[in-house]
Image (tube, rainbow, N blue to C red; front, side, top):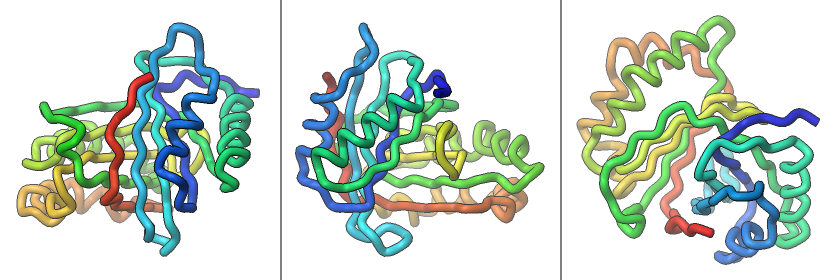
Length: 207
């Protein structure tokens, strides 16, 4: 099966799971030799579709090759352990901007996933990388901003933000970045868009 170089894995599970489920799953898995991983997770009881949603991130210390078969094995291990199905995607990092902070300061995690409309990927990705993500990363209370490409599942563009609290999303600086002229040009060409606010983010755990 296809192998891709990626910087992280994303596990999505549409169910509430025990708080230590992610740590037990991560500890039981076999990761590429000499690779250090970090683990964190975020949960909301009501995602955009009204269902619970858990995101578990396994981030790699350096880019690593992961096969599709390896992802399927990890999905099966999660289901065997928790009784719930999961979808695992390989994520390729495009941008990572971070302000000094302690993990305990984080109180919210916000994710925007989208597929650019046909013919608009270059423009939307340029907007994300040159204006939008750097602008949001500078907003007070935005502590980490990342953008990935999802190599396995739609939506393809995956942007996520670690926030001091949910109020950052309605602050004047955040809304100013969202309301630029370039934003107004690009946003109508988002498709399959999912926006998820997690108000329960677990601290990072290193292996």
